[in-house]
Length: 216
Image 1 (cartoon, one colour):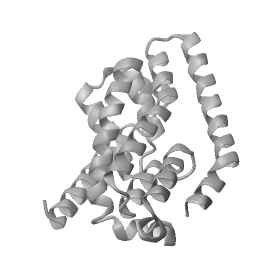
Image 2: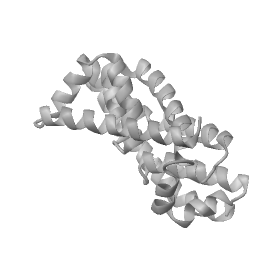
Image 3: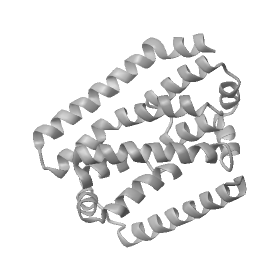
């Protein structure tokens, strides 16, 4: 598929997503958290899957879509769907980040994209690991920034895919616990999310800077 067609498909999907989201928000401008949960429980599964697949690729917070996935499908099926959706998002981001969104990524991340593109394979692997693992840049910035830097697919998918899936566990679990109205599970996944956040913060402070510096 040519870059021109990739660009056309991208902008068509973006327009459809924005129009659909705008119409829905206009019709439901007084949404509450309870409304979102009720919608997630009653919405057609294909609509929910389409939403969680497309919206994060245009900047919609992935944390919300992960929670909705858990609410709609429960934890087990939710994680199975997230695993597939993340893979599809990464596969789609590769041509987009290297095509129509390449200039955008370079403007957002500047010299970092250029430096990562010219780094050794080992450096690219280390930086990809910490970029995907540690909270900070939004999901959209991570997937398109790494793609624009021409990180090899073996690193981009081999490291990014499992880490994005693993870090999705607490939010999908929270949604699944809300789906089953299980207070004990809600507390469990809240605690897990807190421990994960603290652990990632400690990893960043302890090893993140040194590892990236040594890899450069």
